[in-house]
Image 1 (cartoon, helix red, strand yellow):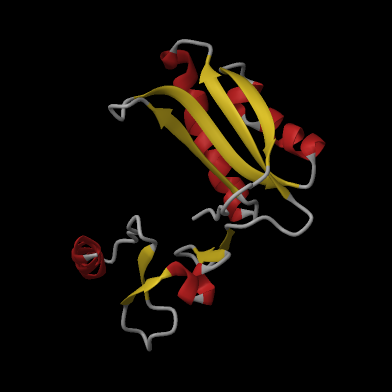
Image 2 (cartoon, one colour; image 1 turned 60 degrees about the vertical axis):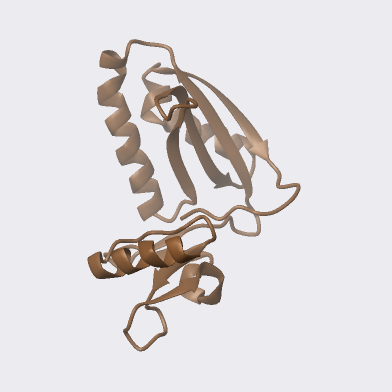
Length: 163
């Protein structure tokens, strides 16, 4: 816990959004304007919705009529050919988030933290058909840069919330 407090002291001073493994985050949502170290669950602004710097809400949980879906992918073309579409993919995900979609995207790494394991997109949709239609609009998929697989995901133990 002392390490978390040190990290938060640094993050508060630098106004950086940092979260430790124990789920503590710097937050100023209801502390009279002074930033405090709290758990994410203690604050409405941190549970289910997050504020972007431009005051647009970012969804972090599916709606009641949605389920989680996971797209895994592996590059099937040389990286120099994929690179421009990868940037378009990042912009596409950011645009979806700004429009209210519950989605996050990232890449998998090996035991040494090096990329090369492919990518993963975790998102909410009403059904498999809607999820597949979304995946097919991904610039990496639309431009034939990745071999991909789509699966629904049902939490068995615990829960997931995007940030």
